[in-house]
Image (cartoon, rainbow, N blue to C red):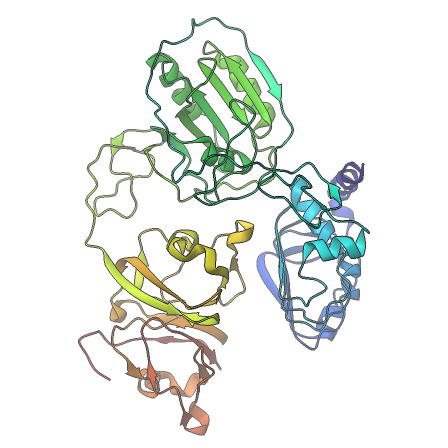
Length: 542
Protein backbone atom coordinates (compact mmCIF):
# COMPACT_ATOMS: atom_id res chain seq x y z
CA UNK A 1 0.00 0.00 0.00
CA UNK A 2 2.86 2.39 0.82
CA UNK A 3 4.34 2.03 -2.69
CA UNK A 4 0.89 2.37 -4.34
CA UNK A 5 0.28 5.65 -2.54
CA UNK A 6 3.79 6.79 -3.43
CA UNK A 7 3.18 6.10 -7.13
CA UNK A 8 -0.15 7.95 -7.01
CA UNK A 9 1.48 11.01 -5.45
CA UNK A 10 4.32 10.89 -7.97
CA UNK A 11 1.93 10.55 -10.92
CA UNK A 12 -0.18 13.43 -9.65
CA UNK A 13 2.85 15.68 -9.20
CA UNK A 14 4.23 14.91 -12.66
CA UNK A 15 0.79 15.26 -14.30
CA UNK A 16 0.62 18.87 -13.07
CA UNK A 17 4.26 19.74 -13.58
CA UNK A 18 3.46 23.06 -15.24
CA UNK A 19 1.79 24.30 -12.02
CA UNK A 20 4.90 23.98 -9.88
CA UNK A 21 7.66 26.49 -9.23
CA UNK A 22 10.65 25.50 -11.36
CA UNK A 23 14.33 26.34 -10.92
CA UNK A 24 17.59 25.54 -12.65
CA UNK A 25 18.31 24.93 -16.31
CA UNK A 26 17.92 21.69 -18.26
CA UNK A 27 21.22 19.92 -19.08
CA UNK A 28 23.20 22.16 -16.71
CA UNK A 29 24.62 21.79 -13.20
CA UNK A 30 23.98 24.23 -10.36
CA UNK A 31 26.45 24.12 -7.47
CA UNK A 32 25.37 25.60 -4.11
CA UNK A 33 28.34 26.61 -1.94
CA UNK A 34 26.73 28.42 0.99
CA UNK A 35 23.58 28.57 3.10
CA UNK A 36 22.36 31.88 1.68
CA UNK A 37 22.57 30.54 -1.86
CA UNK A 38 20.63 27.44 -0.82
CA UNK A 39 17.95 29.48 0.93
CA UNK A 40 17.24 31.25 -2.37
CA UNK A 41 15.78 27.96 -3.61
CA UNK A 42 13.05 27.96 -0.94
CA UNK A 43 10.20 28.16 -3.46
CA UNK A 44 11.60 25.52 -5.79
CA UNK A 45 9.43 22.44 -6.36
CA UNK A 46 10.95 21.16 -9.61
CA UNK A 47 14.65 21.58 -10.36
CA UNK A 48 15.85 21.32 -13.96
CA UNK A 49 19.34 19.87 -14.47
CA UNK A 50 21.76 18.73 -11.77
CA UNK A 51 21.70 20.24 -8.26
CA UNK A 52 24.86 19.91 -6.16
CA UNK A 53 24.83 21.13 -2.54
CA UNK A 54 28.38 21.03 -1.18
CA UNK A 55 29.88 23.10 1.63
CA UNK A 56 30.75 22.54 5.29
CA UNK A 57 29.07 25.92 5.88
CA UNK A 58 25.66 24.54 4.91
CA UNK A 59 23.92 23.41 8.11
CA UNK A 60 20.37 22.62 6.95
CA UNK A 61 18.34 21.89 3.82
CA UNK A 62 15.09 23.44 5.05
CA UNK A 63 14.91 25.50 1.87
CA UNK A 64 14.37 22.29 -0.16
CA UNK A 65 11.25 21.21 1.75
CA UNK A 66 9.09 21.84 -1.33
CA UNK A 67 11.41 20.11 -3.79
CA UNK A 68 9.82 17.00 -5.33
CA UNK A 69 11.54 16.49 -8.71
CA UNK A 70 15.12 16.92 -9.92
CA UNK A 71 15.31 16.28 -13.66
CA UNK A 72 19.04 15.48 -13.38
CA UNK A 73 21.18 14.35 -10.44
CA UNK A 74 20.94 15.53 -6.82
CA UNK A 75 24.13 15.63 -4.73
CA UNK A 76 24.48 16.45 -1.03
CA UNK A 77 28.21 16.36 -0.37
CA UNK A 78 30.43 17.25 2.59
CA UNK A 79 27.97 19.52 4.43
CA UNK A 80 27.21 20.05 8.12
CA UNK A 81 23.54 19.12 7.65
CA UNK A 82 22.10 17.13 10.57
CA UNK A 83 18.58 16.33 9.34
CA UNK A 84 17.33 15.05 5.95
CA UNK A 85 13.62 15.35 6.77
CA UNK A 86 13.19 18.54 4.67
CA UNK A 87 13.88 16.31 1.64
CA UNK A 88 10.79 14.20 2.34
CA UNK A 89 9.04 15.48 -0.80
CA UNK A 90 11.88 14.54 -3.17
CA UNK A 91 10.73 11.46 -5.09
CA UNK A 92 12.12 11.73 -8.61
CA UNK A 93 15.70 12.13 -9.92
CA UNK A 94 18.20 10.36 -12.13
CA UNK A 95 20.60 9.82 -9.24
CA UNK A 96 20.75 10.83 -5.59
CA UNK A 97 24.19 10.82 -3.95
CA UNK A 98 24.44 11.61 -0.21
CA UNK A 99 28.10 11.52 0.84
CA UNK A 100 30.47 12.98 3.42
CA UNK A 101 27.79 14.58 5.62
CA UNK A 102 29.28 13.38 8.88
CA UNK A 103 26.99 15.45 11.13
CA UNK A 104 23.82 13.63 10.04
CA UNK A 105 21.71 12.27 12.89
CA UNK A 106 18.32 11.97 11.12
CA UNK A 107 18.22 10.25 7.75
CA UNK A 108 14.97 8.27 7.37
CA UNK A 109 14.54 9.83 3.93
CA UNK A 110 17.31 7.53 2.66
CA UNK A 111 14.79 4.68 2.95
CA UNK A 112 12.29 6.73 0.98
CA UNK A 113 14.86 7.29 -1.78
CA UNK A 114 15.60 3.55 -1.85
CA UNK A 115 11.88 2.77 -2.22
CA UNK A 116 11.67 5.28 -5.07
CA UNK A 117 14.62 3.56 -6.74
CA UNK A 118 12.79 0.21 -6.48
CA UNK A 119 9.81 1.81 -8.21
CA UNK A 120 12.00 3.35 -10.93
CA UNK A 121 11.35 7.06 -10.25
CA UNK A 122 14.96 7.41 -9.03
CA UNK A 123 17.52 5.53 -11.12
CA UNK A 124 20.29 5.20 -8.52
CA UNK A 125 20.70 6.00 -4.83
CA UNK A 126 24.06 6.05 -3.09
CA UNK A 127 25.02 7.13 0.42
CA UNK A 128 28.33 6.77 2.22
CA UNK A 129 30.63 8.44 4.76
CA UNK A 130 27.69 10.10 6.54
CA UNK A 131 28.55 9.14 10.09
CA UNK A 132 27.75 5.98 12.05
CA UNK A 133 24.00 6.69 12.27
CA UNK A 134 23.39 7.18 8.56
CA UNK A 135 25.71 4.82 6.70
CA UNK A 136 24.14 1.48 7.56
CA UNK A 137 20.76 0.64 6.01
CA UNK A 138 19.85 -1.73 8.82
CA UNK A 139 20.57 0.89 11.48
CA UNK A 140 18.43 3.38 9.59
CA UNK A 141 15.56 0.86 9.34
CA UNK A 142 15.71 0.11 13.04
CA UNK A 143 15.77 3.80 13.94
CA UNK A 144 13.05 4.88 11.50
CA UNK A 145 10.78 1.83 11.18
CA UNK A 146 11.37 -0.01 14.42
CA UNK A 147 12.33 -3.17 12.53
CA UNK A 148 14.88 -4.37 9.95
CA UNK A 149 13.70 -5.73 6.60
CA UNK A 150 15.76 -8.35 4.81
CA UNK A 151 16.14 -12.03 4.05
CA UNK A 152 15.46 -14.05 7.18
CA UNK A 153 16.21 -17.49 5.69
CA UNK A 154 19.57 -18.69 7.00
CA UNK A 155 20.04 -20.94 3.94
CA UNK A 156 19.84 -18.02 1.52
CA UNK A 157 22.66 -16.28 -0.31
CA UNK A 158 21.74 -12.89 1.15
CA UNK A 159 20.66 -14.03 4.64
CA UNK A 160 20.68 -11.13 7.09
CA UNK A 161 21.45 -12.07 10.67
CA UNK A 162 19.86 -8.83 11.86
CA UNK A 163 16.66 -8.96 9.77
CA UNK A 164 13.53 -9.06 11.93
CA UNK A 165 11.00 -8.95 9.05
CA UNK A 166 11.43 -11.11 5.92
CA UNK A 167 10.83 -8.96 2.82
CA UNK A 168 10.77 -11.79 0.26
CA UNK A 169 14.15 -10.93 -1.27
CA UNK A 170 15.98 -14.16 -0.36
CA UNK A 171 18.33 -15.43 -3.07
CA UNK A 172 19.76 -18.93 -3.02
CA UNK A 173 23.10 -20.56 -3.69
CA UNK A 174 23.72 -22.63 -6.79
CA UNK A 175 26.85 -24.46 -7.92
CA UNK A 176 29.79 -22.11 -8.36
CA UNK A 177 30.42 -20.81 -11.85
CA UNK A 178 33.20 -18.81 -13.45
CA UNK A 179 31.43 -17.96 -16.73
CA UNK A 180 27.83 -19.27 -16.52
CA UNK A 181 28.36 -21.00 -19.87
CA UNK A 182 26.84 -24.30 -20.94
CA UNK A 183 26.47 -26.34 -24.12
CA UNK A 184 24.04 -24.33 -26.25
CA UNK A 185 24.08 -26.55 -29.33
CA UNK A 186 21.01 -28.48 -30.50
CA UNK A 187 20.86 -31.91 -28.85
CA UNK A 188 17.40 -32.96 -30.00
CA UNK A 189 14.74 -31.61 -32.37
CA UNK A 190 12.62 -28.49 -32.51
CA UNK A 191 9.02 -28.46 -31.30
CA UNK A 192 6.23 -28.59 -33.92
CA UNK A 193 5.48 -25.03 -35.00
CA UNK A 194 1.97 -24.81 -33.57
CA UNK A 195 0.76 -21.29 -32.76
CA UNK A 196 -0.49 -20.91 -29.21
CA UNK A 197 0.88 -17.92 -27.35
CA UNK A 198 1.03 -18.00 -23.55
CA UNK A 199 1.92 -14.98 -21.40
CA UNK A 200 3.10 -15.37 -17.79
CA UNK A 201 3.72 -12.73 -15.14
CA UNK A 202 6.06 -13.62 -12.25
CA UNK A 203 6.85 -10.96 -9.63
CA UNK A 204 10.49 -10.03 -9.26
CA UNK A 205 12.82 -12.52 -7.61
CA UNK A 206 15.12 -9.66 -6.62
CA UNK A 207 17.83 -7.85 -8.54
CA UNK A 208 21.03 -8.35 -6.56
CA UNK A 209 24.42 -8.17 -8.28
CA UNK A 210 26.82 -11.09 -7.64
CA UNK A 211 30.28 -11.69 -9.08
CA UNK A 212 31.89 -14.99 -9.98
CA UNK A 213 32.23 -17.63 -8.64
CA UNK A 214 28.90 -17.32 -6.78
CA UNK A 215 26.45 -19.53 -8.64
CA UNK A 216 23.07 -18.11 -9.67
CA UNK A 217 20.06 -20.22 -10.66
CA UNK A 218 16.33 -19.67 -10.96
CA UNK A 219 13.03 -21.40 -10.24
CA UNK A 220 11.49 -20.00 -13.44
CA UNK A 221 12.34 -21.36 -16.89
CA UNK A 222 13.31 -19.07 -18.52
CA UNK A 223 13.77 -16.46 -15.76
CA UNK A 224 12.40 -12.94 -16.18
CA UNK A 225 14.03 -11.42 -13.07
CA UNK A 226 16.33 -12.37 -10.24
CA UNK A 227 19.92 -11.97 -9.07
CA UNK A 228 22.43 -11.45 -11.87
CA UNK A 229 25.97 -10.42 -12.78
CA UNK A 230 27.05 -6.79 -12.25
CA UNK A 231 27.75 -5.97 -15.90
CA UNK A 232 25.06 -6.23 -18.56
CA UNK A 233 25.65 -6.98 -22.23
CA UNK A 234 25.79 -4.93 -25.37
CA UNK A 235 22.44 -4.78 -27.10
CA UNK A 236 22.16 -7.16 -30.05
CA UNK A 237 22.63 -10.78 -31.05
CA UNK A 238 24.76 -13.39 -29.27
CA UNK A 239 25.94 -16.82 -30.16
CA UNK A 240 24.94 -17.43 -26.53
CA UNK A 241 24.22 -15.17 -23.55
CA UNK A 242 23.48 -16.86 -20.19
CA UNK A 243 20.44 -15.74 -18.19
CA UNK A 244 22.75 -14.48 -15.45
CA UNK A 245 23.64 -11.73 -17.94
CA UNK A 246 20.46 -11.09 -19.93
CA UNK A 247 18.45 -10.51 -16.72
CA UNK A 248 20.58 -7.39 -16.15
CA UNK A 249 19.59 -6.19 -19.65
CA UNK A 250 15.94 -6.80 -18.71
CA UNK A 251 16.45 -4.71 -15.57
CA UNK A 252 17.48 -1.84 -17.85
CA UNK A 253 14.19 -1.96 -19.76
CA UNK A 254 15.25 -4.20 -22.64
CA UNK A 255 13.62 -7.21 -24.34
CA UNK A 256 15.31 -10.60 -24.65
CA UNK A 257 14.31 -12.81 -27.59
CA UNK A 258 15.08 -16.46 -26.83
CA UNK A 259 14.92 -19.43 -29.16
CA UNK A 260 15.35 -23.14 -28.63
CA UNK A 261 18.81 -24.25 -29.84
CA UNK A 262 17.00 -26.61 -32.24
CA UNK A 263 14.62 -23.96 -33.63
CA UNK A 264 14.61 -23.45 -37.38
CA UNK A 265 16.79 -20.82 -39.03
CA UNK A 266 13.61 -19.21 -40.30
CA UNK A 267 12.42 -18.58 -36.73
CA UNK A 268 15.82 -17.13 -35.75
CA UNK A 269 15.91 -14.86 -38.81
CA UNK A 270 12.32 -13.73 -38.17
CA UNK A 271 13.14 -12.77 -34.56
CA UNK A 272 16.19 -10.81 -35.71
CA UNK A 273 14.23 -9.04 -38.45
CA UNK A 274 11.48 -8.06 -36.00
CA UNK A 275 14.02 -6.66 -33.52
CA UNK A 276 15.88 -4.72 -36.21
CA UNK A 277 12.68 -3.24 -37.63
CA UNK A 278 11.51 -1.69 -34.37
CA UNK A 279 11.69 2.13 -34.56
CA UNK A 280 13.60 4.36 -32.16
CA UNK A 281 11.64 6.06 -29.40
CA UNK A 282 12.43 8.76 -26.83
CA UNK A 283 14.73 6.25 -25.12
CA UNK A 284 16.87 5.79 -28.24
CA UNK A 285 17.28 2.67 -30.42
CA UNK A 286 15.26 -0.44 -29.52
CA UNK A 287 17.06 -2.41 -26.79
CA UNK A 288 17.13 -6.12 -27.45
CA UNK A 289 19.13 -9.29 -26.93
CA UNK A 290 18.78 -12.36 -29.17
CA UNK A 291 20.23 -15.65 -27.94
CA UNK A 292 19.51 -19.39 -27.80
CA UNK A 293 18.33 -20.68 -24.42
CA UNK A 294 19.23 -24.16 -23.20
CA UNK A 295 16.24 -26.15 -21.95
CA UNK A 296 13.61 -23.83 -23.46
CA UNK A 297 10.35 -25.80 -23.52
CA UNK A 298 9.05 -23.97 -26.60
CA UNK A 299 10.61 -22.75 -29.83
CA UNK A 300 10.35 -19.08 -28.84
CA UNK A 301 10.26 -17.03 -25.64
CA UNK A 302 10.12 -13.22 -25.47
CA UNK A 303 11.16 -11.87 -22.06
CA UNK A 304 10.58 -8.51 -20.40
CA UNK A 305 11.17 -7.70 -16.73
CA UNK A 306 8.76 -9.99 -14.79
CA UNK A 307 6.88 -10.96 -17.99
CA UNK A 308 7.28 -13.93 -20.37
CA UNK A 309 5.70 -14.72 -23.75
CA UNK A 310 6.13 -18.26 -25.15
CA UNK A 311 5.07 -19.79 -28.44
CA UNK A 312 6.07 -22.58 -30.79
CA UNK A 313 5.64 -20.47 -33.91
CA UNK A 314 6.70 -17.00 -34.95
CA UNK A 315 3.61 -14.78 -34.68
CA UNK A 316 4.76 -11.24 -35.40
CA UNK A 317 1.50 -9.60 -34.30
CA UNK A 318 1.28 -11.17 -30.84
CA UNK A 319 5.03 -10.71 -30.23
CA UNK A 320 4.78 -7.04 -31.21
CA UNK A 321 1.78 -6.54 -28.92
CA UNK A 322 3.73 -8.10 -26.02
CA UNK A 323 6.76 -5.89 -26.64
CA UNK A 324 4.60 -2.76 -26.94
CA UNK A 325 3.01 -3.58 -23.58
CA UNK A 326 6.15 -4.38 -21.57
CA UNK A 327 9.16 -2.69 -23.21
CA UNK A 328 11.00 -0.31 -20.82
CA UNK A 329 8.74 -1.24 -17.88
CA UNK A 330 11.60 -2.16 -15.57
CA UNK A 331 13.36 -0.85 -12.44
CA UNK A 332 15.92 1.08 -14.54
CA UNK A 333 15.61 2.73 -17.95
CA UNK A 334 19.18 2.64 -19.32
CA UNK A 335 19.69 2.80 -23.08
CA UNK A 336 23.47 2.44 -23.27
CA UNK A 337 25.49 -0.71 -23.86
CA UNK A 338 27.11 -2.75 -21.12
CA UNK A 339 30.67 -3.96 -21.48
CA UNK A 340 29.86 -7.69 -21.52
CA UNK A 341 30.30 -8.95 -25.09
CA UNK A 342 31.35 -12.62 -24.81
CA UNK A 343 30.10 -14.45 -27.95
CA UNK A 344 28.61 -11.20 -29.25
CA UNK A 345 27.66 -11.32 -32.95
CA UNK A 346 26.47 -7.79 -33.70
CA UNK A 347 23.32 -5.82 -34.30
CA UNK A 348 21.12 -5.68 -37.35
CA UNK A 349 23.12 -4.82 -40.46
CA UNK A 350 25.92 -6.46 -42.49
CA UNK A 351 29.12 -8.22 -41.47
CA UNK A 352 32.51 -6.72 -40.73
CA UNK A 353 34.59 -5.47 -37.83
CA UNK A 354 32.28 -4.25 -35.04
CA UNK A 355 34.85 -3.66 -32.27
CA UNK A 356 35.44 0.05 -31.62
CA UNK A 357 38.91 -0.69 -30.28
CA UNK A 358 40.05 -2.29 -33.55
CA UNK A 359 42.12 -0.46 -36.15
CA UNK A 360 39.64 -1.34 -38.91
CA UNK A 361 36.42 -0.68 -36.97
CA UNK A 362 33.49 0.06 -39.28
CA UNK A 363 30.31 0.05 -37.20
CA UNK A 364 29.08 -1.46 -33.93
CA UNK A 365 25.93 -2.52 -35.81
CA UNK A 366 27.75 -5.18 -37.85
CA UNK A 367 27.90 -8.92 -37.30
CA UNK A 368 31.49 -9.76 -36.41
CA UNK A 369 33.20 -11.68 -39.21
CA UNK A 370 36.53 -12.08 -37.43
CA UNK A 371 38.26 -9.41 -39.53
CA UNK A 372 39.12 -7.02 -36.71
CA UNK A 373 42.77 -5.92 -36.51
CA UNK A 374 43.99 -4.75 -33.12
CA UNK A 375 46.79 -2.40 -32.09
CA UNK A 376 49.63 -3.59 -29.92
CA UNK A 377 48.43 -3.56 -26.32
CA UNK A 378 50.29 -1.21 -23.96
CA UNK A 379 50.23 -1.55 -20.17
CA UNK A 380 50.74 0.56 -17.06
CA UNK A 381 51.00 -0.57 -13.45
CA UNK A 382 49.18 1.73 -11.00
CA UNK A 383 49.61 1.31 -7.24
CA UNK A 384 47.03 2.21 -4.59
CA UNK A 385 47.40 2.67 -0.85
CA UNK A 386 44.85 1.60 1.72
CA UNK A 387 42.13 4.26 1.90
CA UNK A 388 42.01 7.27 -0.42
CA UNK A 389 44.32 7.75 -3.42
CA UNK A 390 44.62 10.20 -6.30
CA UNK A 391 45.44 8.23 -9.44
CA UNK A 392 45.60 8.55 -13.22
CA UNK A 393 46.83 6.64 -16.23
CA UNK A 394 48.52 7.37 -19.54
CA UNK A 395 46.73 4.37 -21.07
CA UNK A 396 43.51 4.64 -23.04
CA UNK A 397 41.86 1.34 -21.95
CA UNK A 398 40.38 -1.04 -24.45
CA UNK A 399 37.13 -0.83 -22.48
CA UNK A 400 36.78 2.54 -20.78
CA UNK A 401 34.25 1.60 -18.07
CA UNK A 402 35.67 1.58 -14.55
CA UNK A 403 33.97 -1.78 -14.00
CA UNK A 404 36.14 -3.28 -16.76
CA UNK A 405 39.36 -1.49 -15.80
CA UNK A 406 39.12 -2.38 -12.08
CA UNK A 407 37.82 -5.91 -12.57
CA UNK A 408 41.08 -7.55 -11.30
CA UNK A 409 40.69 -5.77 -7.92
CA UNK A 410 36.93 -5.10 -8.01
CA UNK A 411 36.34 -6.61 -4.55
CA UNK A 412 38.66 -3.99 -2.98
CA UNK A 413 36.93 -0.97 -4.53
CA UNK A 414 34.65 1.16 -2.36
CA UNK A 415 34.30 4.17 -4.67
CA UNK A 416 36.04 5.94 -7.54
CA UNK A 417 34.91 9.46 -8.43
CA UNK A 418 35.87 12.19 -10.84
CA UNK A 419 36.34 15.91 -10.24
CA UNK A 420 32.57 16.62 -10.42
CA UNK A 421 31.64 13.91 -7.93
CA UNK A 422 30.23 11.43 -10.45
CA UNK A 423 31.07 8.04 -8.96
CA UNK A 424 31.82 4.42 -9.80
CA UNK A 425 30.21 2.38 -7.02
CA UNK A 426 30.50 -1.37 -7.73
CA UNK A 427 28.26 -2.33 -4.82
CA UNK A 428 25.47 -0.22 -6.33
CA UNK A 429 26.01 -1.14 -9.97
CA UNK A 430 26.99 2.45 -10.85
CA UNK A 431 29.66 2.68 -13.53
CA UNK A 432 31.84 5.50 -14.84
CA UNK A 433 34.00 5.83 -17.95
CA UNK A 434 37.67 6.77 -17.74
CA UNK A 435 38.35 9.97 -19.71
CA UNK A 436 41.79 10.64 -21.19
CA UNK A 437 43.69 13.31 -19.23
CA UNK A 438 41.51 13.16 -16.12
CA UNK A 439 42.61 12.06 -12.67
CA UNK A 440 40.36 10.36 -10.11
CA UNK A 441 39.94 9.81 -6.39
CA UNK A 442 39.67 6.17 -5.29
CA UNK A 443 38.94 4.58 -1.93
CA UNK A 444 40.51 1.10 -1.77
CA UNK A 445 40.26 -1.61 0.90
CA UNK A 446 43.92 -2.42 1.45
CA UNK A 447 46.91 -1.69 -0.78
CA UNK A 448 46.51 -2.88 -4.38
CA UNK A 449 48.31 -2.99 -7.71
CA UNK A 450 46.34 -2.65 -10.97
CA UNK A 451 47.57 -3.39 -14.49
CA UNK A 452 45.77 -1.17 -17.04
CA UNK A 453 45.74 -2.41 -20.64
CA UNK A 454 45.12 -0.42 -23.78
CA UNK A 455 46.81 2.12 -26.02
CA UNK A 456 49.43 4.49 -24.61
CA UNK A 457 48.61 8.18 -24.99
CA UNK A 458 51.28 10.45 -26.41
CA UNK A 459 51.50 13.29 -23.87
CA UNK A 460 52.35 16.01 -26.42
CA UNK A 461 49.24 15.09 -28.45
CA UNK A 462 46.85 15.21 -25.51
CA UNK A 463 46.64 18.73 -24.05
CA UNK A 464 44.62 18.96 -20.84
CA UNK A 465 41.96 21.66 -20.56
CA UNK A 466 41.92 23.18 -17.09
CA UNK A 467 38.73 24.88 -15.94
CA UNK A 468 38.59 27.82 -13.57
CA UNK A 469 38.45 26.39 -10.05
CA UNK A 470 39.33 22.83 -9.10
CA UNK A 471 40.41 20.11 -11.52
CA UNK A 472 41.85 16.59 -11.14
CA UNK A 473 44.32 15.83 -13.90
CA UNK A 474 46.36 12.90 -15.15
CA UNK A 475 50.14 12.83 -15.47
CA UNK A 476 50.61 11.50 -19.02
CA UNK A 477 54.41 11.11 -19.17
CA UNK A 478 56.34 7.91 -18.47
CA UNK A 479 59.22 9.56 -16.58
CA UNK A 480 59.00 11.88 -13.55
CA UNK A 481 59.26 15.62 -14.08
CA UNK A 482 59.69 18.64 -11.81
CA UNK A 483 56.25 19.99 -10.87
CA UNK A 484 57.35 23.63 -11.18
CA UNK A 485 58.71 23.07 -14.69
CA UNK A 486 55.61 21.17 -15.84
CA UNK A 487 53.37 24.16 -14.99
CA UNK A 488 55.92 26.81 -15.98
CA UNK A 489 53.99 28.08 -19.04
CA UNK A 490 50.76 28.63 -17.07
CA UNK A 491 52.17 29.48 -13.64
CA UNK A 492 50.40 32.87 -13.59
CA UNK A 493 47.01 31.10 -13.63
CA UNK A 494 47.76 28.31 -11.12
CA UNK A 495 46.62 28.88 -7.52
CA UNK A 496 47.69 25.52 -6.07
CA UNK A 497 48.67 21.99 -7.11
CA UNK A 498 48.19 19.08 -4.66
CA UNK A 499 49.17 15.41 -4.82
CA UNK A 500 47.50 12.49 -3.06
CA UNK A 501 49.88 12.65 -0.10
CA UNK A 502 49.04 16.26 0.79
CA UNK A 503 52.15 17.82 -0.78
CA UNK A 504 51.54 21.16 -2.49
CA UNK A 505 52.94 23.61 -5.01
CA UNK A 506 52.05 27.30 -4.32
CA UNK A 507 53.35 29.36 -7.29
CA UNK A 508 52.49 32.69 -5.62
CA UNK A 509 54.60 31.76 -2.57
CA UNK A 510 57.37 30.12 -4.59
CA UNK A 511 56.92 26.97 -2.51
CA UNK A 512 56.74 23.32 -3.60
CA UNK A 513 57.28 20.05 -1.77
CA UNK A 514 55.77 17.92 -4.56
CA UNK A 515 59.11 17.85 -6.37
CA UNK A 516 58.62 15.17 -9.04
CA UNK A 517 55.28 14.44 -10.73
CA UNK A 518 54.94 10.68 -11.17
CA UNK A 519 53.22 8.34 -13.62
CA UNK A 520 50.10 6.75 -12.14
CA UNK A 521 49.46 9.67 -9.78
CA UNK A 522 46.60 12.14 -10.05
CA UNK A 523 46.91 15.83 -9.16
CA UNK A 524 44.38 18.40 -7.96
CA UNK A 525 44.88 21.78 -9.64
CA UNK A 526 43.06 24.99 -8.75
CA UNK A 527 43.05 27.62 -11.50
CA UNK A 528 42.30 31.33 -11.28
CA UNK A 529 41.16 31.25 -14.92
CA UNK A 530 40.77 28.52 -17.52
CA UNK A 531 43.88 27.44 -19.40
CA UNK A 532 45.54 24.46 -21.09
CA UNK A 533 48.37 22.27 -19.85
CA UNK A 534 50.69 20.88 -22.52
CA UNK A 535 53.09 18.08 -21.58
CA UNK A 536 56.40 17.52 -23.34
CA UNK A 537 56.88 14.31 -25.30
CA UNK A 538 58.34 11.29 -23.49
CA UNK A 539 61.65 11.70 -25.36
CA UNK A 540 62.02 15.33 -24.23
CA UNK A 541 63.13 16.66 -20.86
CA UNK A 542 61.99 19.65 -18.82
